[in-house]
Image (cartoon, rainbow over all chains, first blue to last red; front, side):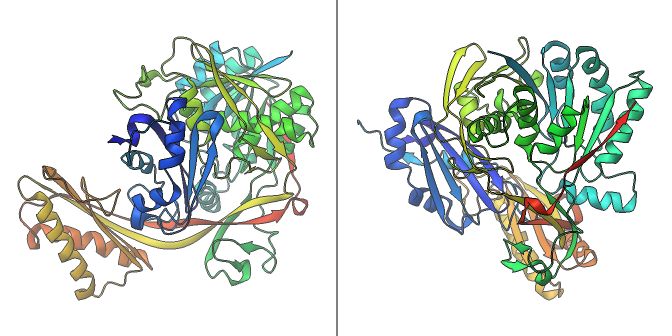
Length: 105
Length: 445
């Protein structure tokens, strides 16, 4: 079993109460693993109660990246959240703990 | 094909100053752009201006200008920045004063205005998206309303010969798009090129975040010399494609990976990156390493703009009180949890009116609320108890309750800190761009 961190890197951005997290394959050959295993449902489950709204996934195959857009995810928004990390900057590192099954494609 | 070089002088209001000086001196750049306005900065700046009409622009403006104005004048580098915040005219006046002190006679400074729409928003037709209501029905004290301006006003000031252009709220990428439109003579409906220029602006707007900042993860993603991180330069050709690079000898790195992370930073649907000037399409972007610290960016696109501008409305939302205390040694997590239980009970027993409560242990679950401590629980934790209240007097009671844990709480609590703050928050809506007029004032040193 791998961690997502072994095959991908990630960065979080924020707009209002919406967080977006990119997941980018280090190697092009791992891109299909991301597409198959890092689904919007798994991301939503992973963050649990932190993310209250829908999670959308966008695919950018030419750079081997997924972009997750998580609604109602920042405690009411960056400007009013009570969280220690109101921007959700730490979310990318948390997402990289997702487990990945190494598969051949 | 003709090429221009744009450098980023700052990616946020508190950014380092030396990298901008290095870029001005050695970057052979044509434009130096400082992005210094966060989502709510302008609302706070508006409050500062209400207290003092000469205030309301970026507090670091003076230091930044003193650091780069002379060298930029020598080398013919034009400066664009949103450091005007709530007071672009005040920022321009101050810049002119500094230029005179530095002997830069004749330096032309423009203040682009029109973003402050507080007085023109219609209470009935302006719709607040987050609350799904008309402005009239938004029962909060509104302190500011600023539209995200596009590139047009900056382009006008460039045509008029401004050496330094200061704006209030402008879309971050538009500050970078404007010199491309001006230099290459792009039409304002050339959506493909506007999309590409916006892409370059988006990649540059956070400064060091594309040159290895916000990227390092030791052992996995190593970045050299972050203490001397170099800020980015884009070499842009007339067709809007670009190479991202940085000054040789500075810290950091420009790689395909750093560019990919920044490409998606604060982006939702990559096919529809909605900006005042264009809907940029990042979905077909190709990112290729072509040399050490040189990455080629191609394949940006764009579609017709929406015709509406996003407006950020600042309002007084609530007050917040916070207290923290540390526990260490065996049983630290259990003592921290006991203290949290006590605090929750105290809110009721002491009759403190709370809109929202957040209690957590830093080191255990402050970032990820459902996290559980591992078997090797941390040897120290810091309790953080934070409450949203109606007023500051109530907020002050939160820190008092945490402080009272010294004598009334679990064993060994230490290092209490307490604070209160008033929260100015932001909601947003859309305004047809025809409802406002952008203009600039030109001043000369």
